[in-house]
Image (cartoon, rainbow, N blue to C red):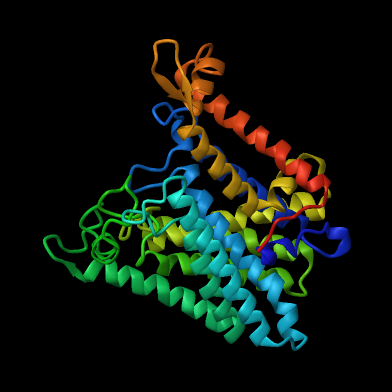
Length: 380
């Protein structure tokens, strides 16, 4: 989205290179974990937690929403301060949200587009909704009100998930089938939920409320980054706030477990803290200390993050449906053919799966570098 591409200059030209690095790290991680050689052999840090708890993979999506929130502030704050017509800004916000949501639906349906069972929620759909609502809140409220709304969403979600009874399960059930979030998704979305979850959707309706709070955490961080404090004060503040948030989220885990699929309030606070610390480190290393050479691949990914996510997803789907003939008259999809012949033939299953995913990332680094070299930045 344009909001994320407007903060891509180096620090010498007044824009945050570290944010692009952070975005690039995040989207590269998302593509890496989404494209293993085989889902049957994956190192545990590259898997989502089975239910309660977290792995490094569970940090990726909230980091992206956090970055979306920062980008909202950095893209819109100056326009609001200089008196830009809010009607024009709102039109852009609604347009971008609609396009990103539609891209998510397209990816969910591709290549068969079975409208009777197409999944309606999804990663891009949640990003679109959170971007829309967080942008509206930003444009209409002060930072104090934004903080209050974020806290209220987390408390409201906690109350709803632990007090409201679910027919057949009672109140406070946080299992895959018995949670209020899962019950609402099944009731309102029917067959249009994630087939892998069967009885719940990790990007469902009710759990979007705390996901908006994740985005608002980024919005508030954007306010901090725009403040007149020194760079080291900003780094110190982010590290301190991040450490406090991690501690609070981990403590909250005892009452409302950290859970990515339910996007629990403890998960929001915990992952926002982790995001603050990683951003602070990138900001210190890249924008303050000036160590930039190592970051070039992530900058290339970061300035075309949406294109990378969409195109890599499309190619992954195509490789699973394109069939190659075998000598015995049967056929094999292109993706497992490549995996079995180029990776599994010489490495153990788990290493072959990882090498395939890493190779896929490098392929897309080449593709994104070609766009970067031509100054092509795809945005909506």
